[in-house]
Amino acid sequence: MLNAYSTYDINSYKSQINQENLLDEDSFLCVDEEEVMQQANNHVQEIAAADCHQPPERYIRQEHKEYGNFTTNGREFSPAEIPVIDVSLLPSSPSELHNLKSAVTTWGCFQAINYGIESSFLEKVREIGKLFFGLPADEKKKYLREADDVDGYGNDMVLSDDQILDWNDRLYLTIVPKHQRKIQFWPQNPTHFREVLDEFSSKVELIFEAVLKALARSLNLDEDCFLNQYATSEKIGARYNYYPPCPRPEKVLGVKPHADSSAITLLLQDEEVEGLQVLKDDQWFGVPIVPDALTINVGDQIEIMSNGIFKSPVHRVVVDSEKERMTLAVFCPVQSNQVIGPVEGLITDETPRLYKNVTYSLDFFLKIFQQGRRPIDACKI
Ligand SMILES: O=C(O)CCC(=O)C(=O)O
Ligand SMILES: [Fe+2]
Image 1 (cartoon, rainbow, N blue to C red):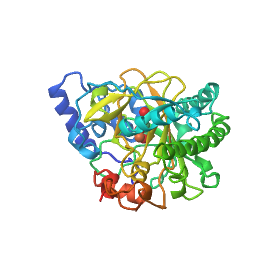
Image 2 (cartoon, rainbow, N blue to C red; image 1 turned 180 degrees about the vertical axis):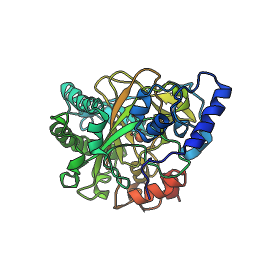
Image 3 (cartoon, protein in one colour; image 1 turned 90 degrees about the vertical axis):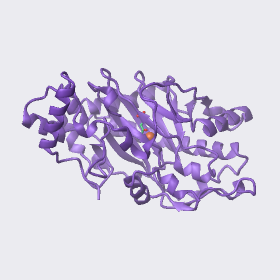
Image 4 (tube, helix red, strand yellow; image 1 turned 120 degrees about the horizontal axis):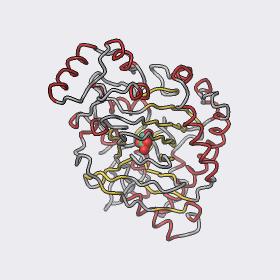
């Protein structure tokens, strides 16, 4: 069902080149046919390194084809004033709990600080990703994901022939539970990669639990009511996203508009380069970098369990013409094979049930995604 992006129609590519040249003299300068083919088969990092003045056609965004058909306001955007939440205060401070609730009911996300990971360790987590993407192509390709799988090194999954591809390369690894890890995709270069990611994984589990409990308590619910909807060994997936510079950043997207299928997603941003944008009231806002913070957003599963009180925000990534960017997104849990649904205590005469009970599995997600729809819309009553 899933195809790796491996073939490319050279004639349609050339005709696009010619059209572009008529319209815009400086648009395309890669002339060698073989080189073009090779680039098209390669990862974005290699396409970017080939010094074209124009991204290949498969990456050129077309607003009407973007997933979900979200209307946008071009590249104009203001900074998002997303609340900073001190996670260490959540068990004891009603006002911090209130701030959390307010962040997640409006923006669907917050900037978490004091969540139990030292700044020096975050450095290591970033460093192993940067060292990996800095390896020669052949070395990285030892960890190439298979066509019908998600774990490994690769790029945007191709779900349909006319899909516009994202301008990024990824390394996706299942980190929890340990016995579900596909260790053959965990790089051995840099040598400390596995050790660092393993330590990070145990910290992630604690943050996941602390945040889900706090979200429940902020609605005056039993603190385990979200966690109880899961099996004990749900899969958590970590994805390093690497965004090379793009000669025409306005023509591509690092990640097209989407909402996450997780309960929550923890995002370790690049320490210098912004790019994440969140949609609110039909407008895109740039998510600022808060040093050492994790940007945590609610995913579709918690929107469903909270009967729509918490919002799973639509977000996207824009790229830069000169600067590379690397982030680490951790999906907790990535999907679930359990039946999940709105917590009973939230359903009243005034606030009727808005979502069906559903199984938010990978198959369900991909089926709806392929139709160009938001999976959560298929869960609404
Ligand atoms: O890299 C980012 O800023 C966000 C990535 C993202 O949205 C995702 O991986 O789902
Ligand atoms: Fe995302």
